[in-house]
Image 1 (cartoon, one colour):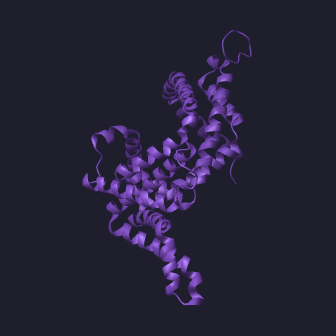
Image 2: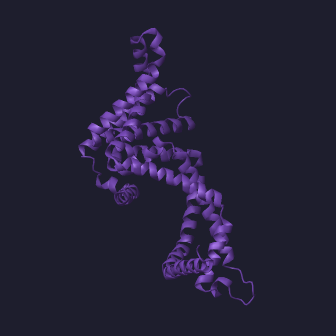
Image 3: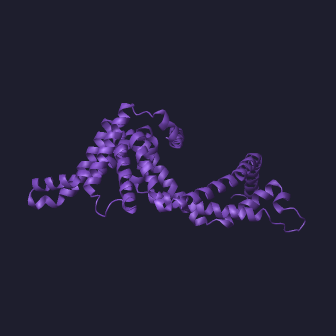
Length: 327
């Protein structure tokens, strides 16, 4: 049988060691906290300015400009971001995208709650000596105080659920990038779905006429599976060109759809002016033009695009480095 006193001493020793490590890291945390505090007014001012500018642009429906710009970026430069686009498509195909959006919102709300609680706690002076309690606490006491405040100010269930959803999305991305065939599966499946949305109805009608009468009900499912299989095969055989073509068509569909909605909201066109067939043809033409530009530039960014898309390039570089270590 184990000795309770010995177990307690071991646990205390482990806790003390952990506390010592955290104390040694205190200067790092202090510098990060100071940097965050210095940047907080700038970020707050930038947020206020952005909100003011956004409010002034409301008559022009600015919410549609983001999808248009993102779509055009994918059309003419999407092939330069394989890791970023593959990660996003892996999350979408795995069905974890809504969970990621909800998780990010929950974490942001809990961060704001914890930040507000910390700012309030920094002003507490229980002994009324004119000095805040946190300024008089030693490192261990301050660590315990911060930990207790964090646990009290956040919703532990929301944070745990958000962490679980983000972990599921991360596993989906890692599994996709782990094997080249999995990457082709993710991109090929998405490409097959996109192509099926464009011309699936025509092919399904032709397949239904070719099948026996008692088997025509299976035509939609057979055609959908055939499109996805063809997309996977094409993605595996011609990885980079097919990837660039998929991204260009995805961006074209996004940009054309957002532009059509913007024109309708601004009353530039009458309701029903943009038929689905017209959108499909325009998106296909724009995507083909974007793919031709990417092919001509060997899927490399021009200098102007490299500067304009610097944030996406930074995310692509960070993801590539991260997954190179993890995968």
